Length: 270
Image (tube, rainbow, N blue to C red; front, side, top):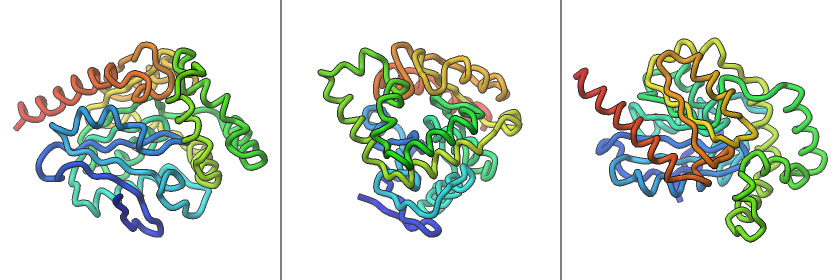
């Protein structure tokens, strides 16, 4: 296991490959998960890319720190980790809140973002009332109290079959996250709005939606893509909020096409 002290907290990360050998891709996980959700995708990409995975503060094995958080604070953590590892520029792939962090990083430290992959995310996610209700419920009764509703938005009915042992495992991942980290991140999402910033993104962007996503539905992701100059929009079939778990091969196909276009486009301008 690899850890780095960034500002006031210990960040758990995994670096696969050397940062000087291949293009670097950073994967940012969603609310209530840790970086293991990217396993099937990163195994296939590691031969051609350097992979950086990490647990954002309040999740996985990273420290919780002081809450509530802001998306800007979470982006500063990522920037600090990239600086520590001497990553000058990376393709940033963020899922859900990870996509908000990617947008914030692009706004605050644009030199670090080579391109963005915004998976199952948006310029703004949910309403303040919705997030306040969720925070109150989790603080009062714990994550198990909201788990069934969250999992219905995360996964399709086909994945939620009782005999699917992976579904039980991902439920465990959700309910075992630290409550303080979860609600701190809920507050960050509640307060984030990148509607105006989206139009200023000047790097290649791919926006991805799951056709059965109950958290960030396809129309919301499509709207976000429309705000970003030149952004691509793709839908992953038979997927909920976390396509890298349900449909890794379909996600990989879309990712590979985008990555090839980014790298080929850069070479043609050299």
